[in-house]
Image (cartoon, rainbow, N blue to C red; front, side, top):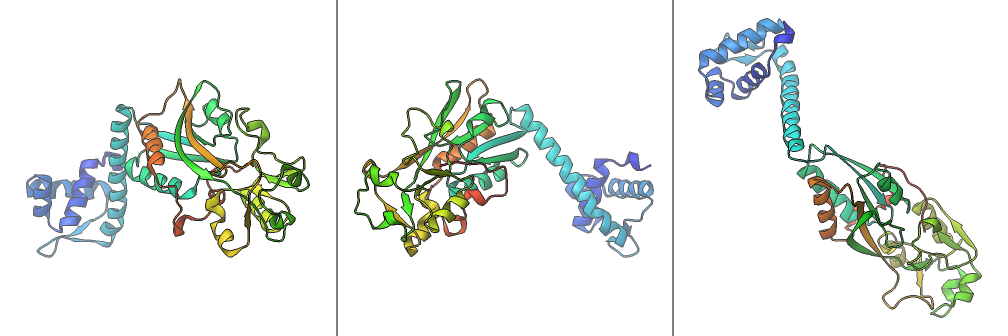
Length: 319
């Protein structure tokens, strides 16, 4: 008998519970009260449970009815979501969107875009793979439909690149580091005497971009958090996104240094979205790219935690 329970019966049950009246439920469903009463009586017979106490002037949910109402709402909600997803897919909306994100991308605009995406496309599953420079490969092999990369990345000709925003990456050291007391600009020879801390794999760097390695002595760390800890401890110098170290610079825990070859505007990384040209994103993916393009890159107090600390996805090395 339970296999015969219909969605129409559940919606009638929910309407009667919400309206606390069979006649009001009938008006809401545009049905006669007698039809509502019979539908509910049939449902109770199939379930073997009394849903309403009809001894008073108005029907009152029984304890069993209140318990089953929760399940009825869940079932009806799932069916609505199922229908919405089917309608979206028929219109070309992606059922799932996987994004490989370079850890250098600022967390504030990223989290804001994700929150807005979930509101806009609740039926599209959003997955992330947070990486340190190794973003191109998962896009190339189809594991991710979108990638967010820095301007240093080797992007093959079969990938399309869409500009997003820029990230300032100053070179910093601990105030106790020997480089902190040198007069700017600091020469390449002086840098060679000290350890550089990097997290970008040189193999991922495009030949058209300036090499991230400034010293013959460098340590490659697999996590921005570890790199930041090493910088604070005075173990070396390195570039790191400004949005991660604003508090350190303000407190004096880190100091910025200027090198001879530094551009006048400072070191800046241009972040871009990439995707396979032969497999462009659908409506959800295109919307996500546009949202990232227009998001403000300045972090808010609530969003200063580094993207490297996000638990979603994998974290690998970079520089």
